[in-house]
Amino acid sequence: MAGHSKWANIQHRKGRQDAARSKLFSKLSKEITVAAKMGDPDPDKNPRLRLAVKEAKSQSMPKDNIDRAIKKATGGDAEDYEEIRYEGYGPNGVAVIVEAMTDNRNRTASNVRSTFTKNGGNLGETGSVGFMFDRKGEITYLADAGDADTVMMAAIEAGAEDVESSEDGHIIWCADTDLNEVATALEAELGESESTKLVWRPTTTTEMDLDSMQKLMKLVDALEDDDDVQRVTTNFEAPDDVMAQL
Image (cartoon, rainbow, N blue to C red; front, side, top):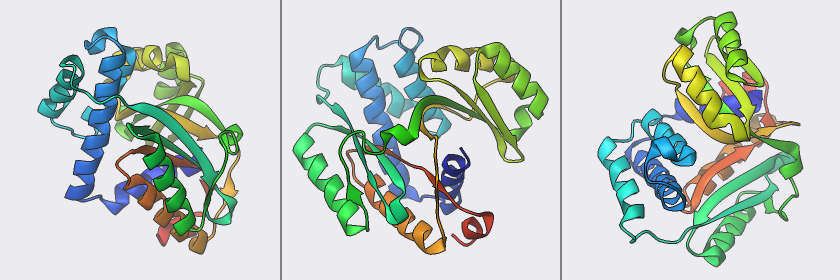
């Protein structure tokens, strides 16, 4: 969905600095530790761990950090994290999904609710906005991975569902349960992807003007600053002239 990929571009353009990178590595480490604890500590035998490691590498996370996160799970000293999804509304009624990993459900729920309230949104019940999204696998490649036809053919062969190609690159979509298989097949044809992860893909979008987008970015930034929050997804759609002013 255009809104989803545009949001990624906004985050990239904002060029998160060192403190934010440290926070990002912390979130990636948590995902790796949880994945390793839930299954085999060998990424080749654990699809979720393999995808977590792949995503960490795409964000330039050092190998030492990745190895340490895996060892933490196998060493038996890893915290017990619970995965929770929160759903709510942001400015202009835009849908927001917040994915968290926490060792204290009450603390996280309180913080997320407070962040929504302070930034012009409100937390809803589970399922209040989830129906506006599909759970999908998202694999991204830079534009130089191949032309649109080459990538489309590789994606079809790999079992993907859809491809969006632009001058910025290629986004390949697949069923959430097929992500590991499709990503592996694409790697053989197109090389290493820029990113491979499970996402919430909007099926319907909310149009945003400049004022609403600025408020939404403030809300998302505040949510992402919470150590328990792993990722935030919205279903915004904004014209190019609005995006250019952010």
